[in-house]
Image 1 (tube, rainbow, N blue to C red):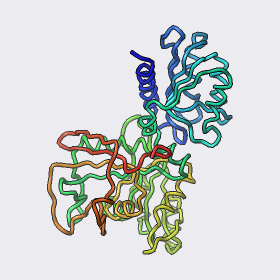
Image 2: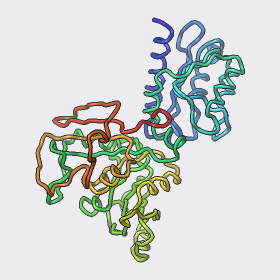
Image 3: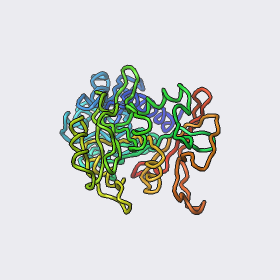
Image 4: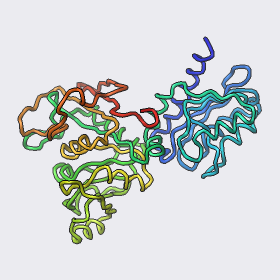
Length: 374
């Protein structure tokens, strides 16, 4: 096995370690680290478990102890070189006597952004960067998007019939997909900071928007896009303890409705209106980013998803297809309105994945990769 192939295998293990903390580290990235001794043996492993706890590199180096000297550190992201909740990881790497560092990509945080690698090189370590960069970027898409572009990373999720309908003409949608798909949908909720729907979904389905899984992370915010504050103050959203409730509206919403929703426990966020007087979604996403979140699972309904596709703010889609046909011009589509006029300008998915859940099939893919990997 050549060095490049061996390095890739080690980095894959780092990515697996990092993913063990999925849903728990935000606003920090998921990071896994591996220390290999000069003799070629793995002597230390670690992953960042949650924000505020030790970073992966320090955990792996602590486990390795003196065996780290002269060895190699594998890590999926550039080690930090600044004081935050924990000390700089570069200090620990240099003190341990590591002679080689292999990483997937730079940390775009302005406090790091290549400087961590510079410090390691200045201390005499060989640094290799770039293997499995796309895989690593997909793992931390939210973190990279916020740090590089200052916006949320948005995943559009929908359960559909084979003919692309979200609901019947009578607005029935529960349940298009089976229990196995719904379980995976709750896993998706658990790994995102924000779960978002439009007010139409609240009025039609009265969802709780929680991740109903044992010992799972929970969305930090449950968000409703509601231009005129039609969300009922008795909605089931307000009976849940998992995560805060944010209603994003415009400045034309009534004061009485706002007071009632705030009394029920909602935080009201006012966004700019678009040309039709609705919440401007790009502005809403920027304002939500200011609340310290980085990933958003947008669950619909059709009106919200259509506006999001039209605005070009969806980065990734997860589409559940059930083996049924609904039909009808008035049944709700995934993307309504005018859509795309020409096939040449139609958005195409990249990094496709296909999954099966019972009788359902799921297609996942990226409309745009996290910057700077776009």
